[in-house]
Length: 319
Image (cartoon, rainbow, N blue to C red; front, top):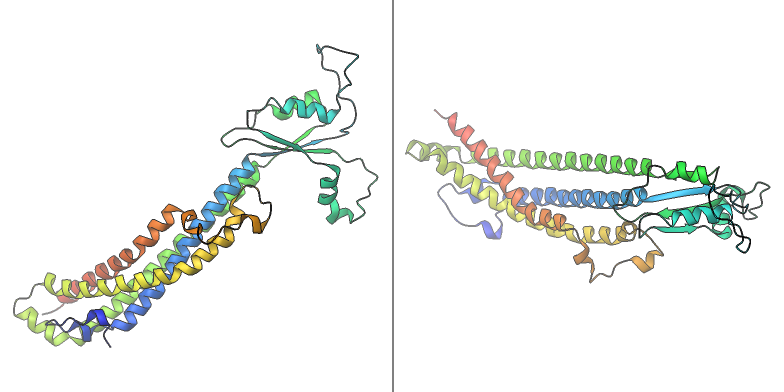
């Protein structure tokens, strides 16, 4: 049965030769899968970039015996009126010299107890003294001073600086693997769409073989016959691609809304950061929107190019 928009009559009767409905539905399904794959790849890349950037800018500093007096620096002025700094205070004072916009936070005893609950239980009682833990978040684009750990150890012996660069590289590797999987999935979808179009074209050629041989014998060029087949297949693929992309909009918007809270650097609460439905379209990446708009046209081009190739090869084998 021909689709409503495909009822134009022609000498080859392509509306009856090509399986309009099956080709349209299959292309729509392939476009739906391609749209979801593009969405997943874009989301993985966005989340990985933000998480990797956040990990690269984050330092964790541990100061043993934080309440003990800090050692007196050589050449530093001594006063009797000012109370001596503790080891933790001395580290915080030095961290104040980091680039402007750096945020430092010394975790309280309650925060440390909350972190240790999985290991120590609710009582959080331990005979070992706990170090002070200081979180340092550098501004975007700033780099960790290469001598930071050495300088802190010289001033406050026993200070440990933990860099998160390893986690950043792992997240980037994860994003690269996800993008490679998405590219493979898109290539698979494109290959299946090409095979479906080729089979539909062969069916149409077999159905109208006698008419095509007569027209070809009367002087109809290969370009004319291939163009008629390719034009019709391209229109069907364009329609199927458009329908599949539209059907994919609802789930992809839902997925982006669910992933939005995890794309921010700080997450007070899921409810507070869950975007409103009305503002969600403006949050979608521009490259994803461009890809979704181009998807139906890509499906049409695949259908057109595949049909052109198949018909021309078939015509060359005619006597």
